[in-house]
Image 1: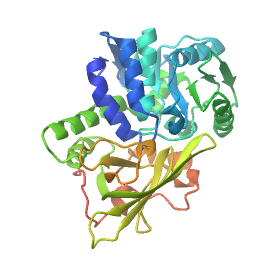
Image 2: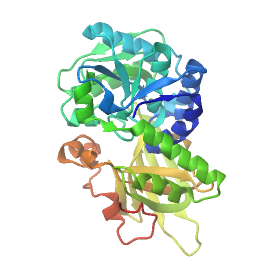
Image 3: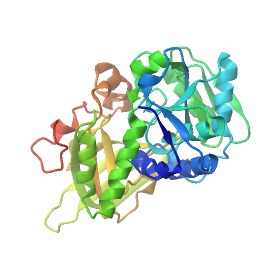
Amino acid sequence: MSFDLGVDSLGDLSRGAALLGTGGGGDPHVGRLLVTQALGDRTVRILDPDEVADDAFVVPVAQMGAPTVGMEKLPGGDEPVAVLRAIERHVGRTADAVIPVECGGINSMIPLFVAARTGLPVIDADGMGRAFPELQMKTFAAYGISGSPMALAGENGETAIIDTGTDDKRMEWLARGVTMRLGGIAHVAEFTMSGADMRRTAIKRTLTLGIRLGAALREARRDHRDPVAALAEVVADTEYRHLRALFTGKIVDIERRTEGGFAVGRARFASFGAADTSELELTFQNEHLVAEVDGRVVCTVPDLICVLDAETGEPITTEGLRYGQRATVIGIGTPPVMRTEQALAAFGPAAFRLGTEFRPVEELTAGTAGTAAPTP
């Protein structure tokens, strides 16, 4: 069902988007501030995907770049609308709606900002159901939508068009180079499509999911409830279904660097107990890719790996990881549409050269201690 979204919902969405960003996707707090300023006391229309006309011209808009750069290089405010206008000029059509490319991090907010500035509606869906680091890693691409032509916009009024036909990996490579030369952050419009193709390829109602997850964390803290259990209750009622507590401990080592336009590195967690020598290691490229406990894989992409503050339940991004933090690491299963052969080819372990095969988190953790979302 479509609805109107105002600034009072942005706090929950920001928190839920940080969780769905699986460590990356950019800082949703920055996006929240942008939307709050642009929106004022008005609202944005959020369209249910099933209510979008088949022939509607749908434009995904997003920010691209390393999250570590985004922490220091804030958007000027004109880039998201500039990139929308650039793609409209290039294809000769006016957008009927915008849509997030991913529901995690700042990119849950960028379409809302565009909507606040232009009056366009935002579709309650996205192409990842989480966040991924590369442009071709979308259900849009996995199910036959071409990313080209795409537009990029920089902070000084620059715009560029990249068209690589059906070669989305080359599009990503070229766009990454342009983004680095724009200072490490750019805004993009890509994978333009019809309303009918959006419904066929998108993961539906993920903005609503972000709001529900954020509200669950807020209410759990207010009511002194276990935040992991509260999240599990929400997840159980969705296509994600499964949530597992993977590890609780403190960060004892963090390696993080900006490389090739990505934030890459590893984080190591040690158990609290003196008699328990277990360790968990996370590998990330903007987003968390694989979690291993004592060398055994317990969760891997495309399933979600999320780090929560052990006391508050607040999500911690990859650039927010610090030595000594006490945290709980959870794994969340992705919807079935993200576990198909086509989807895994686009954003499974092989796409990241992880050297492991995908197995669902509920299988990898079967028989171990943890919090599970009840099976409907």
